[in-house]
Length: 610
Image (tube, rainbow, N blue to C red; front, side):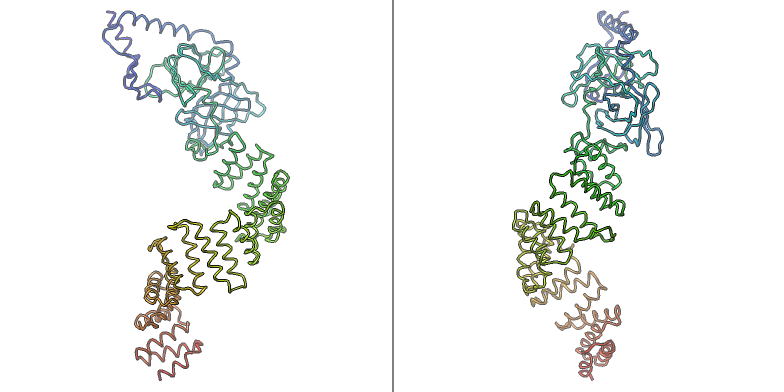
């Protein structure tokens, strides 16, 4: 008879536990044996079960601890809203910091665009910032705007409670007579390294999720977690409140999927250095969002010149009107005062004015010209001769068409360990554009230095410099070396990536180097890739005529006359090719048309074919 009673009582209470149903996410799948359902059970086990249930019933009915009356004001209800301002979720949370810091379950906030908390006194307070999130443990930390509202906060127990200790659950309640269910710690396991995860013998309902679990001293130990699957109403799971309080926004939080899933503004990381990295990592945001982030940073760190300089740069780059340019100027004036590195501040201001003056959509603003930018970089160089500043000075001279001065500035950079492929090539460009056209060999040497910054075998990144050196070889009268560079370029980028222009350029170099077959093959390929490009077609006609490929030359010349009927060179080449085939009447007609279009050579050729 005793065995029958035992079976009848134990089976409903523990149904499904053997398969992990009704367990926390941490427990599920561990295969722990909770209760072995047997048809025969000893009297001692049965008596123990009855005593436990009786003790729990008595404990629940006990009066609330002394701290409960005050502590209840720290627990609140929370409502989250989606992008259409419709209610997304409702739940609980509690305050842990005097400036509105609070914690709750993460699932409430996933997909939320805004949220409000409702205090026990009925006040609705908006959530302003997300301070951290952990989706695995279903935790979120956030801040509310309390205004003048005085908040009650719960002190956090940082050591935790042991198995067998008594704990209380503090529910959200608008009644002054709060009832705190009481229970015991059944299990404590490690969580996230230094924290704890608890199994509690404590009454549980869905309405209690994210309510605080308290110790005897009135300190919060844990947050109640959402139950999973079937479970009895006397077991609940809770995660360490100290863990929840430790959540923060890290410098690399922009890549955190849990945070990205929440549309509410995220707080800055807790230190200035981390916040600066966070700014850098989020600089690709939409200008309006990034501006808001920068403004938050400046409010948090008002003595940081870096935030002011970044915001000023954003004003110039993304908000191009007189009002924002004035704001940029104001920010930079303040940054110049705050920044102990005055040279850096002048360089930043120089780059801003430079970007404004060279914008593809000019907007006159005060004296923000290239000359003004040059004056700022000179101020920076007067304080510090960093290679970066000299490179900027070279860029300014280049933009002003002062190529000799640009070459001098780039040369000074290339004498330091800050020389790069870009600075060697910049020097080559500046030298190439000076009036001294006899220095083509030096141009080749400078581009070679740019290429040599890469180790052999050259990576694809070196290909643009090899292309430029090929052109420089042609200018220096070394077409065979140019063809070799074009071949090297082809090997780096791949044949399928070559443009019609590449084949045209290599054809010209090969022709000058008397590499005739390469010249013919390349011009054919150029026309194949761009069949209606008249420059390539007329060159094909000219090259093929030179090597007695008259049918091909005539086809190319005729196509040019169709595309550009008033182009005299096409008619002249067509006439010559027709004449070479003995078609004198057609040749004269083509040459006559060339003459009518102003070709000075046409008269003499017409006489040849009379």
